[in-house]
Image (cartoon, rainbow, N blue to C red; front, side):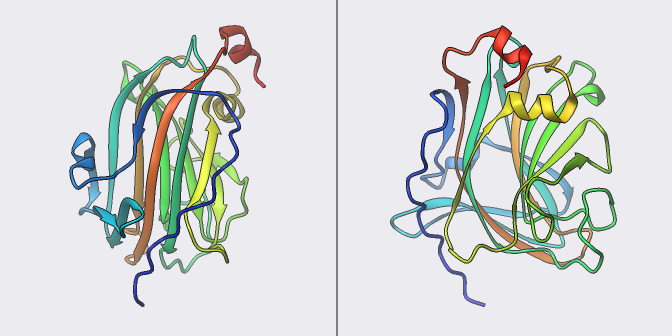
Length: 228
């Protein structure tokens, strides 16, 4: 099936006043040089594509699993971190079992975005993982089958009838409190994204763009600790 370039999304309404810390627009061929790769099983092909009006990272995998990550220091204890990005899925991994967050057997998803709270002893680190699933309902959440320190949140499900990138803007603090039941003990140390299909021995195809990290303006420690 021929690849169809994604359409630019309509302007998304501003939800938060965003004090930007780091933005990734993936607008040139060197844009991925800032990112490091963690290989789990073979390398996913991550490459910059540009259709003239729009540039983005396209991730294609054939039985492979690797993630791109960027190390960043963000205060998650005295400030109120936010993240936004755009993504689109063209092909989901081919699963034989009912899709689930709870099993390792077919733990493949076309698109994932991670926020990592790094602890001095790495196994104590916490992770928020945002997922674009094929069949799980939006809002499904729960612990990763690999560790309760990794909490999964399904933001999108299935292919949208209206093609084009979908915009996400997440209140990291609210998501962390909902997932773990308490404020973070550690600061944010990295952000990552991944497309994988190694468990299903199949393929997947997704795009990522305009990843933005920052703080909610005028947020206080008291507001953060009390939730939203």
